[in-house]
Length: 211
Image (cartoon, rainbow, N blue to C red; front, top):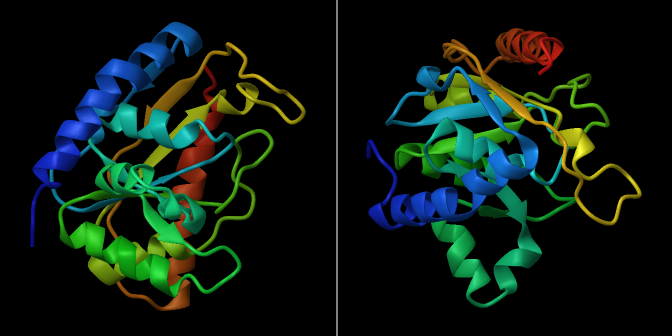
């Protein structure tokens, strides 16, 4: 079992973070980060968060200070050069409208190789960033690998590109990172539901803190 991501992925992550994501996030969105010291520096961890914007994956990965593997639509992996780049950056393909079994397999492989795996708890964007209908996928992945969960809240990102807008807006964004949560003791549904509810409550509580 690896304790860190591949060297090439770490290099690409830090290049993109310091050259693009971090400067843009701070200059354009006045990014504030709380709880960065809660992030484990190595080893597999399941990062769970709310989701309100297409900007969330790079902002979240930037704030936790290490590469985060996210699922991405399968079509992106058919584009030459882009496919290799996003794979190095941690993206893995998911075919929309089909079973999540392959996505689960990819996620477990990334955890085995020392990555942080990012899961949006509701599985899709919500209008205001609050989680109202959490899914069990993150808890299941955590239970199967016995990887800890790291709750993260993104506040304000829903205002960057609201429905109907053609261009991003300069809006304040705050990211709060909670304390590590132990994985579910088993993969039975009551355990998964309980751990999912715990993560949801923590993320929504952080969201209520606002800016």
